[in-house]
Amino acid sequence: MNRAFAAATLLVTALAPGRLAAQRSQWTDAVYVTGRWQAGRLVRAATRSTATDSLALVMRVDYFSNPPRWRAEIRRSADGRTFGAPDIIIGSGGSAQVVTQLGATPFEQHALARDTLVRAAVAVMGAAGRRQGAASGRIAETLPSGVVGRVVFRRSQRAATFSDDLLNPGGAAGGRALLASGI
Image 1 (cartoon, rainbow, N blue to C red):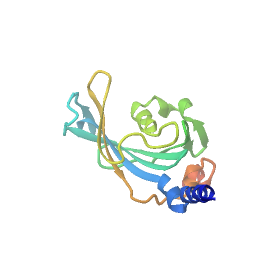
Image 2 (image 1 turned 60 degrees about the horizontal axis):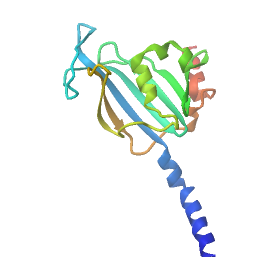
Image 3 (image 1 turned 45 degrees about the horizontal axis):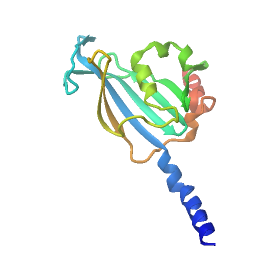
Image 4 (image 1 turned 120 degrees about the horizontal axis):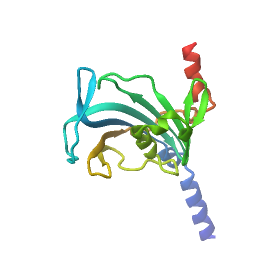
């Protein structure tokens, strides 16, 4: 009898709303490359020091995750100060789709898959749809040659405040709202 009660207690505890909400996460990565912006152009610099302070902001990625489903909104910067419209990538576990005004395309078949910074942003989401790496702080990534490839400043939100509709590529929040806003 005590074992049945203990098993039931564990089951209820595991399925409690607080536990389910704890799986959801939301964070933002500010992505920098070594170098600086000069007269509207990115001047790259090669360094092996992961503590470098010569960084140029090139991208902001907003992540929303409720494993195994996730969403990344990638906004690029052409000057280090302003950001363009987002490229939206929605995934479920290890598979991902790029959502546009016209529909969804598998990530590997889309032009974004050829961009190393975008590939690195997608790789943050593991096969189980969970964040890889530190929850917050500075993350420096080096290339196989030892040169710093990118530096990320990650900031997590305490409580995820998004609707699960964001994680549905066919839903209004997934991509159709993009089309509606353009008409």
